[in-house]
Amino acid sequence: FAVQAQGDTAAAAKAEPESISPSFDFITIQKGDSSIDLKVTMMAKVKGSMIRLNGQQVKYFAVSDTAETAIGSAVTNNIGIAVFNCKGNAVPASNKEGKVHFIARYAGNKLVDAAEGEMTVKRGIIVVTPVKGDSTYTLEAKLMALGADTAVKDATVGVFVKRLFNPFKIGDGTTDESGSISVDIPNNLPGDAKGNLVLLAKLDDNEEFGNLETSVSQPWGVAVSDEVKEMPRALWSSHPPIWMLVTFFTLLAAVWGHYVVIIWELIRLRNERDHHTTENA
Image (cartoon, rainbow, N blue to C red; front, side):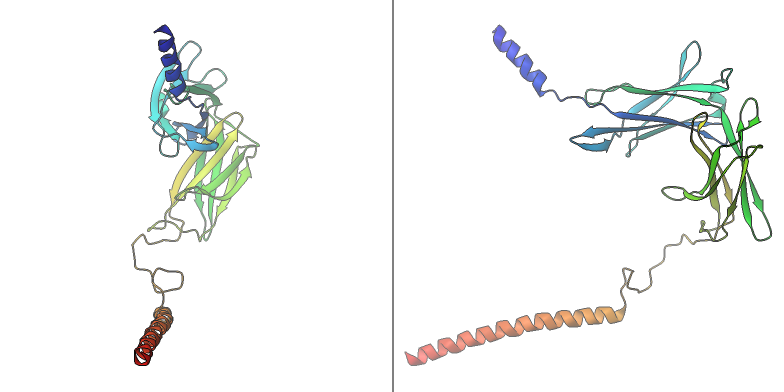
């Protein structure tokens, strides 16, 4: 009886699935309104393929010299991303170096191992100023370290226009002594129905500040109607030209017509053969 129980335990242990160890990518994005996006991307390798883990709860903590304070949580979406926006008034006070420290923690479950990540970033902000000339548009961006309110020089700041999936890059520049760059905006960019463009100034993967982003909306684009209209007849549309339809159905009728004639001739030959056979008998 004891041997049987031991065997059952071993079989149960063997049947239990092995847990997977996720990749846990934690970044911060400091916004123009002084809030901070805490963003985690969770993926795992299963049977040789990387899959995105959705429906997993990630908790976020602010860390001071003495304690951890829970500030919120988020659940990964269908592409494995969990984003929690820490409002400006909830961001912990910076230390003497002007930095803040965050922890993202995943508790794990029976199938996925626990994981966590830490980020320490210096507080900063990008201040943007749209400038409209007689026939030109320019976006000026200034990178500042918060607290001391000092300009940050020799940093590469990019300017983008927001699109449905990924931002479209217009240009970039290296900040000067005043922490500023200036990028010309083309006047032929498609916007929304009113010609509005959402412009982004971004600092990516900086050693001190991490990621910074500030957006501004301006009516500098070409208005693009959002009205749903039937596509004109064209080769590239779902409504081909009439001449193409006529040609297609004519050729189709000709091909099937040949099949019909061949089958008819075969039937006729068979009937004639049976008729001659009957006469000869």
